[in-house]
Length: 339
Image (cartoon, rainbow, N blue to C red):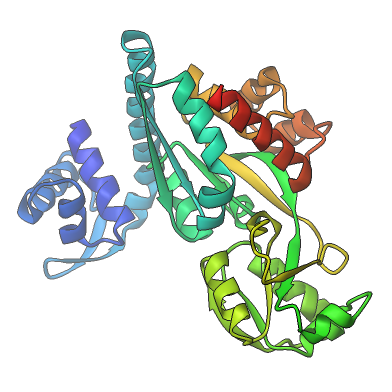
């Protein structure tokens, strides 16, 4: 049995049994992948995949039994390399973050700037996409950390640390009817076309649930992935925007921002990583930069913990800041980074 065979097996499973896609990911040939998997099956004397002709159609019961061990072995191999690299090249390496457009644009810049100044030889990489696909990258150990809202808790393989709480703004043109209402209700808001984020992005699911619990069906007239795009269409008079408070801009003088925190519950941004992952010293430092309200010792204990209950107990006393408090921290980071 060779480690390369296990890598091929893992890639085929992650690519939904598409051998061509797995081969492309691994920069090798489709026949080569198929041949190595067949050699592995012969050696183990089992059939890992069910087939229809040459096409893989399903994972066999025996295949399911060994796949968990394959994942653990590959993770252990990666951790061995990371641990060795930390000692052989302690000032070099990479840090890969998976996150949404909102976090990449509004939250990460001062943190990344400070980190880059402190670790100039660490290569920084940011993957942007919808939260579910970004969490999957972290669960599969394809990135170091994922930063996202509620859906991050759906992945049981991830250890999560709370970063900050946030809410929403209603954004409208100055002459909009909602600017003349002192205490806006959900019913008031639902009576206008809504412009907001696409499903799966930036707390959209929690926004929908809030309207549902109030037995209201708002007319969502426009969705986008980018807060600035939503604001562009608000300016065209297409409706009332609902955006993350992180997207507030002081120079949007042609728009009116209305605090909507009395209408919607807070959402939580967390940073997550696979529970079996080796974390280097500079990566722990990054975790602390994202969640400075949690002591470094606690972060290390959370990373080493083996159960959800143990992690929850360690984090129970943490006072998670809201975005306004987080914004002050980010401003301080900018000052430090530029000094």
